[in-house]
Structure formats: C-alpha cells, structure tokens
Length: 324
Image (cartoon, rainbow, N blue to C red; front, top):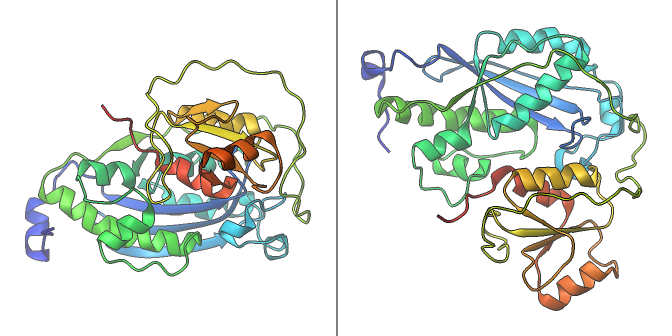
C-alpha cells in the first residue's frame, strides 16, 4: 500500500481530519457494567499520527482482578497501585482535545467513561475512532479484525499481548499507516461522538482486591424472553475464523461475568443465545469442559466446538457481519 511521504503530507492532508489523537488501551477485570480498569496506556499522536509521548499506569480496581490469565495482573501486583481517582487528572490531560483511538473503541470508551463517572468527573473526550471500523473503510485484506492481524499487516511486532502499554504501542504503530492511507485516498474517518456519563449508581458490592474469587456461584433468576435473532445460522464456529452474526451460542456452568450480562452482549452482537445444545449449536461456552452437564455431554457427542469464557469474550470483540 502506498503511503504519503513527508514532502506531500502537508499539501495533501485533508483539512477536516483531527488535529491530534490519543491511542488508548485499557485492561479490565471483565466486561460487565461494574467491572473496573486495572491498567491503562495512552500514546499521544500529532495530526499526522506521529508519536509525541506515551504514558502507562496500573490501577487498583478495589476488587478481584478478574481474568489474570489474560492480563497477568494479580491482586498482589495491584494492591499498591493508585486508585482511578488518583490518576484521573493525568489521564484526562492525555486525552484532552484529542480523538480517542482504540481497537474496539466502544469498549475502551465505556470503561473509561464509567470510571470517570464513579470518580464524579467527566472524561474530556468528544470523539472516538475505532481502528476496526477504519480497517473496514480501507478494505484492508485482513484474515480477521484482531489487533494481531492489523499489526501483522503493517509489519508491527507484538511483544506482550494484553499488556496495555504494548497493545497501545502496537496500535499506535499500526494506526499511523492506516491514517496515511486514509488521507491519501481522502477517506472519511469513521469518527463517532462520545457522550460522557454524568452520574453513577453502584451495583451490588463485588469481591475486593485481595480475594482471588474468579467465579460467582449461580443464583436463580427467572427466564428472560429475548427477541428472535434476525440473522440466519451460518453454522458452526471454526477456530481460525471469527464468530459470525446468527451463530447459536450456548452457555454452561459458572461465569465470572454475570450470565445475563454475558447473554446480553451476545445478543447485542447479533448472535443467538441458545438455551440448549443441539446439532445446530454453533458454539458452547464453558469454564469446565470436563463437567458432566447435559450441555457439555451433548456438545461432545455432536462435535460442537467448546471454548472457555476468556476466549469467548475476546471473540465477542470481533463478530463478523451476517452474509447478505
């Protein structure tokens, strides 16, 4: 892909493009409304996507750290870290006046906005740009929309996946050529408005940091009728491909994220929440694949793919659209 060189950048750069960017990555205790940030990184870029500086911090989430097997941050590591309220001002200074850039930017923005609302402050972000959306606008020939695929396309080497600082670095290095490609073709950047939360109501108290409880026991709840999935079932999940809208996903056993919230995210992504396992089930999500539950037994009998919650939450970040 041909990029703009330094001699032509100023002359051909679209005037409507933002004047600066904040490439952000946050690692969290989970995906639910009451989950917390455990680390954050920001790379500040100028109008042309060149790095100005970078910043990284751990954050004490005041509860269990969640999926340690993903982000590697244990209770012991986080216990002496600052609270979000302690780093909110410096974080804000890094974001102020810039477009927030992230891979699956809605997730990062929502987590940041909630933390600021808890701290009774407002995040100084007015627009965000998702690099997944930008790669689609540019029609990049990627096998999927994972960060590692975007990085590989531009020859950027990942050193520590799911480390906020390294993920932000990788994204900053991959964003610059993406931005230049968009400028060269005068592509409209997929900017979206950010609406900060202005108040916060805490939910039920969660285990505090120092406790390593990863999963909560099941509690009874009435069944919830959901509208039917609008997309046809494309078949089973394949391990080397993303989830696709219309797939039937079943859950079995305890999950670290509240089951109803996990099912909500599944439905919001255009997937069908299956209450049982059949030959039509695309995927079973369980943290205990060896448990002799009816769903796991049927899944093994039918050859239904099985993944754990951590892998599934990553897959949820990149669901492919349904076939037209």
